[in-house]
Amino acid sequence: MPANKKSGCCGRGGRFYAGPKLVIMVAHPDDVQHILVTSRLVERDPLTTSAMWPFVGDGLLTLNGSRWKTHRKLINPTFHSELLENFLEAFHEGGLYVSERLASDSAGGAAPADVHAAALFGAMRSFCSAAAGTDPDRLIPDLPEHEASTAIRRVMALIQTMMVRPWRRSLSLLRLTSEGRAILKYYAHLRKGVEEAIALRSAATEEGPAKTRRRLLETLVKPGGETALPVSEVRDELVTMTLTATDTTAVCISYALALLALHPEWQDAARRELKDVFCEGDDYLRAPSLAELASLRVLESIIKETLRLFPVVPMLPRMVREEIWLSKGRVPVPKGAMLFVTPFLTHRLPEFFPDPLKFDPSRFLEGRSGEEHPCSYLPFGLGSRNCVGSQYARLEIKVFLATVLRRLRFLPHSRWEDLEHALLTITLHTIKPIEVYCVPLQESGL
Ligand code: HEM
Image 1 (cartoon, helix red, strand yellow):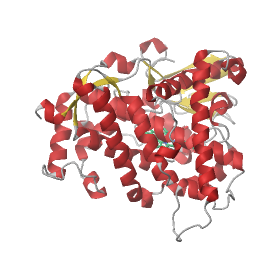
Image 2: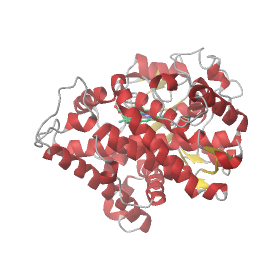
Image 3: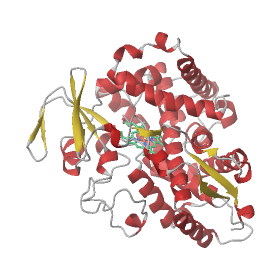
Image 4: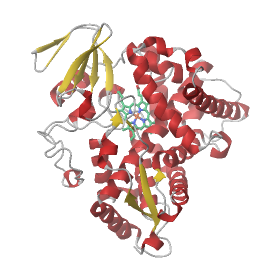
């Protein structure tokens, strides 16, 4: 459904029927807390999992019950905070890639550049190095960037359609349209890359030095080809992780750069902070350390405010197995209904975020935002089914932005209305690609 007013759902939630199924959208933080924290509803509803399944198979996004627990237990440690420092170089390389693509796509600021397409491939390069320990050039899909970016946007729209029209889930039907074939081509490339990564790791003869924490691919596949899960699940999980790790951060970076282009005062504030921390001089453009990143408080607040206004995962679907009561016991939710916890609505409630449509990172700088309620801000979800890659994502986004903002100045092309005109589906996607003009800093005179 569109994210703007045409969606027909009020700011505090709403209800509708998808066929015979009652679907309730939840916004108030009390209800969010009741669902995700107190009642610990962790199972995703089959309406969403079966719409995602044709694309990602059996992975964390679609599994429930004991199979989900097994996957989650294996994957949690591969994104542990102790590993983050090892990922920094991969993030820096990804950020440089995004800078170069944006500069060249924008032809020195003469044309608008599509941010998602560039950021998607930058994030893919980082993910190949960080999670698989493999040279990105061996695994990255050999596809034009805009084709891959468009395929993802179309998949997200299609998943929404498939939720309410189950007959559209057939892959044979998908092959009949050029749009469907473009989507399947992208997935074939993604799967090929994943299979290549599994083959490379299986071909290794030795495990290498003992480590307390191993990367994702090292955990799932041992040298010689032994796997921690059935091999089809390893493949599906790697496809799931590649998709979740790359589209989400690319969407967030697209929104952040568009918002900074529309709010030059915040772009200048971020750049002043970067000059303070990296000290202008010969090595101003160096790769950041963890300590330097931790001191970028303005940038941090810009990322938080971007995710408040445009939470990349806008709705969290949950299956109701036993009747529960919301709104402090006033509203019954029957067994079999589906709940959509909706950060997109929660983050715009004026009692928790005054003047909610204003892009105002100072809410987070001053540590004011959402303090009133522990569940009023949840860009990475809450409870045991929260985002497995949240720390990875936060750090990658910060490195990418710190890298591009030291090299390029961003001017607006997409307007606020374009940012709002988006589909609320698995990830938030604008109807039209987000575009900005990118001027190399030496040429902009700043
Ligand atoms: C801006 C970036 C990101 C945002 C805002 C985000 C947000 C979220 C949210 C809200 C959920 C919970 C969904 C629910 O409760 O139903 C989630 C789940 C998930 N995220 Fe992220 N995510 C981001 C980046 C990443 C990255 C970088 C990875 C991988 C490295 C990742 C992997 C996953 C996976 C696999 C799940 C499913 C977890 C499960 O069901 O157990 N995400 N994400």
